[in-house]
Length: 578
Image (tube, rainbow, N blue to C red; front, side, top):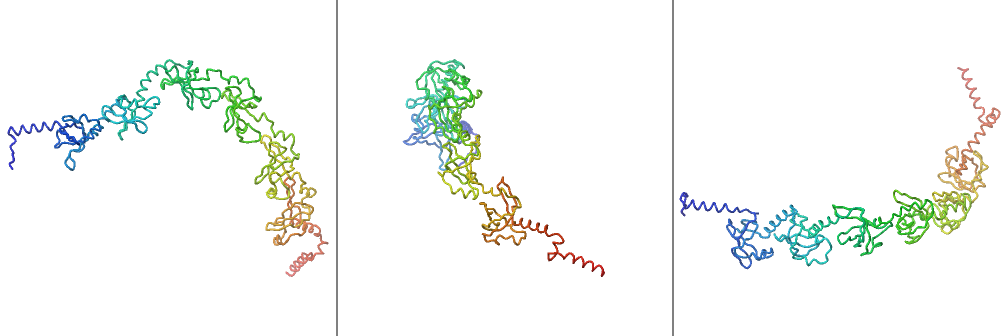
């Protein structure tokens, strides 16, 4: 093969010039969008010519048709494609028309979004939650939420399908490449200008005549004003009376006068009131006095009480705590129904907070006052056991709606209260003594044992250190259980009080049934407490013996009486011998 090294000839210079000029025209780079010219068409593919490439890229005809480029599938037409690979492993060029269209379309969408400009599109299909909109200029697909189709609910949107119209770009996700559009904003933008002009007509204090009820919500009622503006009357502005829902007061299509109470030019909203066109019934509160009884009408029942009206529009609260003297946490539903007229006493009037409190129980006689008048403290009364718990009984007295409290310690003087309590059941009738009445606390305490003789009275003529005779009932590690003769109560002589000598202070020395003497160590009538001691009796007897026999004459009779004298004699003899 011959190699030409001489490039100075005119032909070589001309070739170099042509080659450089051709390469400078087109810079081929992967990832760039380039234009290709159709130079061949088959049943399935389209072949493109792109300057600077060594081979012809191929496009699928179906891809072009799905992009809406069917009309461009002709020899000589130019199509923009994305150059993905200049040469793959098979030596072929990879291009994509759809990706090029997406990139070009996205750039235009970003530009429109940044400039806040509307775009032209058409609704092509419905999808979950909204519709798919195609950008007419680039063919990019965007999402139209159902809430953004129109400024009012539409049951049928068939008249909007495939019709070119303006849309506002409301959201762009550059990471995912998603776009969200709104038709509603375009409609509202035109209406907003008109609505601003309409709202300019209104100011606070104006009265709107004959506004028509358009619709309800949980927070108020909407009125249409002259077919050009919708205004809201909040639930609290409907009536001075308590209103649960607007349909309690208004019907669709009715016409009412409204008072303008607020105008928001930024949000283009007008707030109105119906109740402020009428006189405030709270101004009549001066006609009512504290602690006087009035007829009220129950208008609403709640878990915590009932709302009542002194007169139409003048509402008051009857709390559940003011329903009954005796029943706590009682439900108003069990006592009244809506529409009932009941007697109540006004207990509070707060003009600043516009609040009135009432009480129903104050119109009823307090059963605790009735009980105190009929059965003062110290009197005896018969009651029936209506309830019982682990430490007390509750008695109903004289058909009054009151339960008197009887503690187990007030059942008997003799046994333990808990043991005595097991003997009683519901329905038992007992004659008891009234021990305490506390009207503010709504409490009455009674006792059963107070109606019986007190066995502790046996000690009335006794005093401390007096000797008494007792019978041993039983013994255990703690000591001796004994009962004084003539007394019905049992007492415990503690182990430490059985004898002076510790070795003799053993409870098991006694088997039970023995009669022994002991002394009264402690006596307290207020606490009904008495302590007995054998040890004290021995100490008293020893002291008495020493006192009685401690003289010299009496000492001679004792076997150890001369001991001291003998010791003295021995000491004298010893000193003489020394």
